[in-house]
Length: 185
Ligand SMILES: [Zn+2]
Image (cartoon, rainbow, N blue to C red; front, side, top):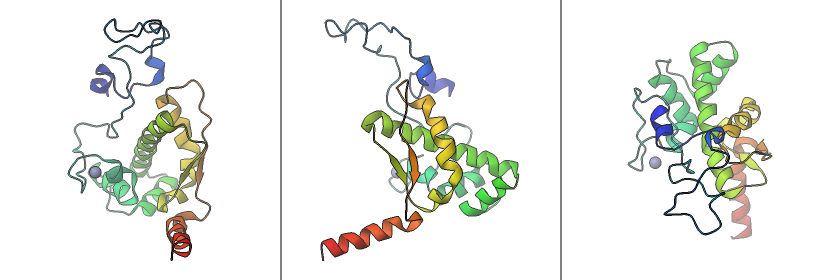
């Protein structure tokens, strides 16, 4: 984390100077008081925190992609990488709810990573709502804890974006596909 902040990536908004001076080489006339310095926070993110734990490789050829960390199998693999037992995501969440400290740590990492990833969506798109689908949308703790965490990563003083679970749960993707089929037979 220290390295990321030194390079100006993923810094919490509290580190942005209130009156950051603009770089003379990039500032437009009259914009000097509002432009961020070239070394200031940028809209990027790294989802893994511990550089001593190898980043998971993704099918796309890169490492530590969202899919490798924020999916159910990604959560289970992260639990294993950090010394946890071979469990699926549902079992890890159940264990966390029953006081298993390793499972709680895994769920905490997941929440922080999801918060950082969705903060970038808010920074770029400012959506009216973010709806989670898939199996992990059944984890009710996410709707409460992720918005509490993304505040630190959104470049705004006020974040009102709600996080909701899909109405049709983890079947929402299949239902959507079925409706598209009816609309375009
Ligand atoms: Zn990838």
